[in-house]
Length: 124
Image (cartoon, rainbow, N blue to C red; front, side, top):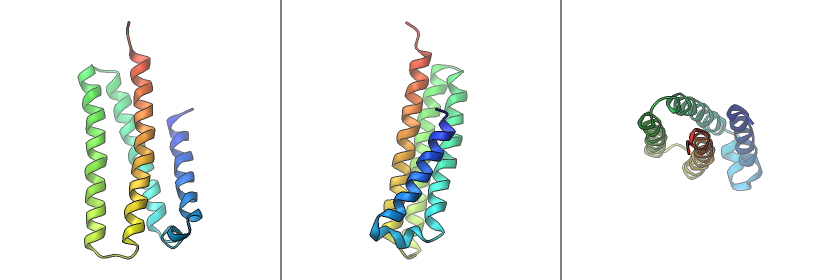
């Protein structure tokens, strides 16, 4: 299955999950929830492209791309959550947990895809 299709399925599942969890429904009804879901899908798509391109190069380039993508997602997430919490906007708990869920699920997809790339490049 193409990585883009996987990201689309993840985005739809995350968005739908937001509407099925009763304490989360009010936050899911805001513009922030679809923005988080789509934002992480788009970010993960571009980071995946970086990793795929780096896999054609040296091993060091691939490792740098994987580490860089992880660092970029972590730093961006930290800045977004901190900014949101400092602004004292509504739904602070829901925002934080929702962002973490989107981060986690997209990161798992990126890691699994990176592992497939590594396995396909192995030379014995």
